Image (cartoon, rainbow, N blue to C red):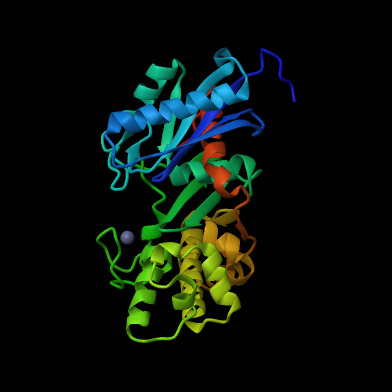
Length: 332
Ligand SMILES: [Zn+2]
């Protein structure tokens, strides 16, 4: 790696509900330095943006590079947002509604700033540096508290008419089914997100159903991490296994529909749950995707785990900054 004074870098930022991660990143995806701060999502918008800027400065300081070597900053934020204008439209969990993120950040740091929604950014990270390297057509699904997704068509993120294409968690997997946080019914997120599963576990426990979860986490559902899911599975806990199997099955159904519409070469499945239970869940997702898709489209598709883990956000944000700095379009 060349560390000459002419070598350029960008900052990749992952702005989440609990923490803000920033990293100084080279063009081939090498992470030079990192910094982290709590988001404090309930604080005034200006304060959150101030924390974002200061975590960027800390990352540059830790890199020992001069600020002249930093060409730009890419930011992944919860949305919905307008990536062209760099404005957050609405964020229920972080006080950023209406925030002009890119104007603020580039004003403070004196370098161009670029914005996209966190899951699009994660998908783009996997596309450029991770499990989707070398693909042209790709779908990313990330299973966590909610379910997010991103779509890459011919090497570009699909933004669509509203700029918010890729809300894959709200694909309908059961018409008029379970109620979803978005207000609709039957969305994938209403079955396969951690939030949905916790709702069902609570109901089952209330009805007196036996589960090792009560032993592992008591009634503190915040403690239900992917590791706890793993332990419950290994202990052959029927409640947890049934719930996870259903989640994987319905994720497969959604993937099948996505394949029919988009015909990608790869589908990347990410999130802590899949990392903890890859061998158990991925085969179910694959089987049900193929079952629910037009055969010629599903024939050679690979459904694979994400490769970058928590770094997908900072790396994707950096990748977007690199491309935009060169004047290349990252989205359609
Ligand atoms: Zn929904």
